[in-house]
Image (tube, rainbow, N blue to C red):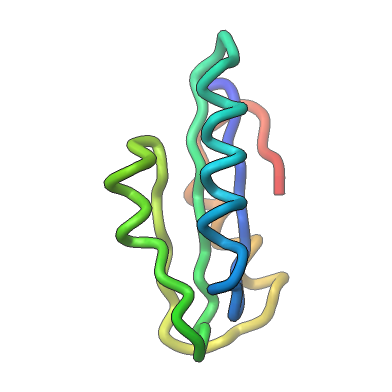
Length: 88
């Protein structure tokens, strides 16, 4: 795997779908293998990413029930990532 994109999310219901679709469209046009990892860090709004996995096959979700902070969410994503290069 070449690239892992880690996206920490907290209360992002108004923009997460558009963001994920844009990232996915861009990465799909590249000549390398990639994964997108979203870490939902205890959102209290309707930040729902699980349904996006149907539209974006290379999307993985880590869904924290409790908010632990951005650093914790980024670390979780980095530890799960398989890419030689990791972007957050």
